[in-house]
Structures are given as structure tokens and as C-alpha cells.
Image (cartoon, rainbow, N blue to C red; front, side):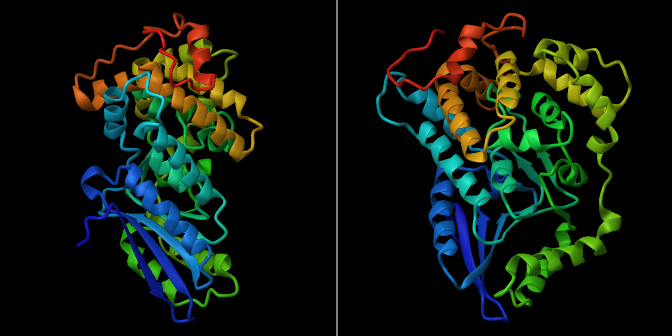
Length: 369
């Protein structure tokens, strides 16, 4: 079997058209998105977009545990800590964010149907790949989240666009808590379109290949997915996000970030799902919470391309400011789970320091410690 980070296949259908399959091939790391993966996916998607024989693209992850558990943050940490802060050349971590967002935007604007088989863990960079698909499928094993505030970053990969399009203040809540969603949650908030059991994957592909999709590929794919979704309806879980919608609205009803976080921290109920969600806020980076709050509100009316422009600017600054590197260190490098955040509390966060995240990066500038 090939050790390439992404595997590509082309399957000729009965109608004479071709299905392009892209498989993230790093099951041992839960298909964590690497720069090499990005550099393989981008040209292949562009090639298929211009190939009249290709009618549909299918994207999945190797193994049964994850579609994509997020970006390869260990590689990002290595790039951040091993590269000189005063270097004038673009390093690997900077290239990662720039090329990742370009790939995400390509998927969002793709001219052909892209089916994303979102089985298992779908987090961070994995959601960036999934969010733009035209046909996003989740399974009984799907677990989705944007947990960036726990590692000193902020919800990116277009989150300023898709979190703002969720019902009520659900997007704000998900970004602050990083709470995990199941398949029904993902459909409710608009991150997925269909629920189909993972065991039906091969049958779904076979049914798509049996259709003549040369005239209406989007409609044909919808017909197949709809049929399998209806057959699996009894297996679909209940949505905790939907069930807690009113409570989430109350908890996030505040005029400032401090007020909202105080509301979350003061939750005194015994609901296990909500208790787990609010506990994560206390451990999150105060800087990251602040970045999410500001970015979420500042992108409410932005176009998708504008959101990606803003996030690239913020992410490049995050590589320089130290909070992101510290979060990765505590979680995955030293694994002491005791990050030393730049500010110990929301009240102590310096607005001038946070303002630097929204400034154009200057590669020769050394930020304060």
C-alpha cells in the first residue's frame, strides 16, 4: 500500500463519467492535516475541476477513527520553535496557514459536487475541509469540534463565516467551549447535510457510480444520499445542541465577553453535557477567548473570502506571539496539561497586546514576551 499522505483514485461509472476519490492517508495520526497533504490535494482538485470526465469528487479519511482530527500542530510547533523569530523568509508554519486556507476556499467554491464522508473525528482543520463540501455526510461515529481556544489559537479555517451562520448564538458558544458535536448536532448547526451509517459507505459509492450523472450530478448525488439517509433514520442520534438551544441562548446573552464567560461559569445545573462544555472555558486561553469573541463579531457580515483574509492575518500573528506554541507544548509536547497563558484571566488581558493579532505580520519584528 502506498505511503503517500493522500491517495487518489478514479472510478469509471456505468454512464461513462468518472468519480474522483481523495483519501487522507495518515490513519495513525487520525489523518491530521499536513502541509504535504495540502500540497497534494490542491493541484488534484484543480485538475479534476477542469476534467470534463470527472463529474463528482469524493473525499474521505483512511481508517474508521477519523476523517481528519485537525491540523498537524506538532509540525507547526516545530516550525514555530525552530525558526528564528527575525527570519525574513516564509517558514513552514506560515506556508501551512496560507495554503490551508486556499485549499478550504477551493472546496467552498468548487464547480462540481464534492462529497465529504465525515466519519469519526472531524476537528479544526478537518472541519475546514468539510465545511465547504457540497454534500457533507456524517455517521454514527462522527464527532465534530472547534477546540482551538484550548491550545492558544482561535476557531479559524473559515469559522468566522460558518459559525456566524448557525442558529442564534450557537456559533459563539461552540467557539468558546470547543464542545464536541455528534452527527445530529452537525446537521442542526449547518456543518453537515446527511446522516448515513458508516457501514453503508461502500454501498453509497456503488449507488453513485450506478447513476448517470452527466446531466445533473448535484441532483443525482442528492437522490442517492437521500435514499440512504431515509433508510438509516432510526440510527440517527438526538441533538444535544438542539435540546439545549434555549439554555445556550441564555448563557451567551451578554454585552461583553467577561459577562458571557461569567454566565457560563455560573451554570449551576446538573446537565452533564452542559457541565462538560462550561468546564472547558475555565481552562481555555484568555487570549484565545478574546480573539474568538472579537473575530466572531467582526465577521458577521463578511464574505467568505474576506473572512479567510482576516484569519490568515490573525493566524500568522498567532505564530509569532507565543500563546499558540505554549498551548501545543502543554497538550502534546511536554503533556503537562499546564499551559502558562500570557494572561491569567480575561480581566487581565491587555487590549493593546490583543490588537497585535489583527495587525499585518512583520517578520522582522520581535514581539514582547
